[in-house]
Image 1 (cartoon, helix red, strand yellow):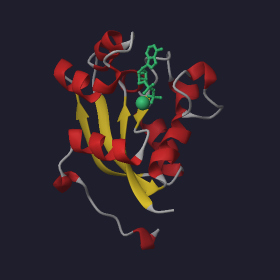
Image 2 (tube, rainbow, N blue to C red):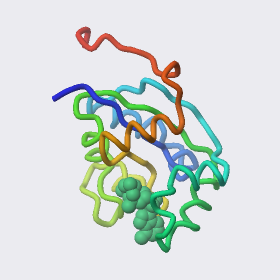
Image 3 (spheres, helix red, strand yellow):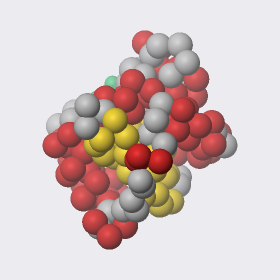
Image 4 (cartoon, protein in one colour):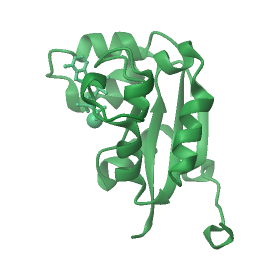
Length: 146
Ligand code: ADP
Ligand code: MG
């Protein structure tokens, strides 16, 4: 399995609850390393653009309201099988259906305020990373040293 990258967002409820450290610990323990990271308070156009694939969904307006309701951390995670690994550590979209020990099971408030975002495919990961970061924002690790 190759080292790959994925886009992760720690959503407003995670920052509001003060669980950034606990979430990052889970991700690091799963072998994922941040290679770019920034705090943002998303504007409406940024949130609408990022979630454009969902614009016909009934929850779109509410999702944009929520994602612009407070600060977030946007980060690029790197590691073996990073796209699937991040989603595994996050758990199901609906915290009521998320597996024990997952980020969403532990911290999510609702199906909407569900603490974390993770790209769902390698192609979407590339597009989502490019939405928020320039190539020059990404640092490099020597994976042989781990
Ligand atoms: P995921 O984040 O697990 O990939 P989706 O891509 O389907 O889930 O949805 C994007 C985000 O929209 C979810 O993480 C959640 O914040 C919100 N969302 C999804 N489904 C609903 C819903 N039925 N009601 C309200 N918000 C939702
Ligand atoms: Mg999704």
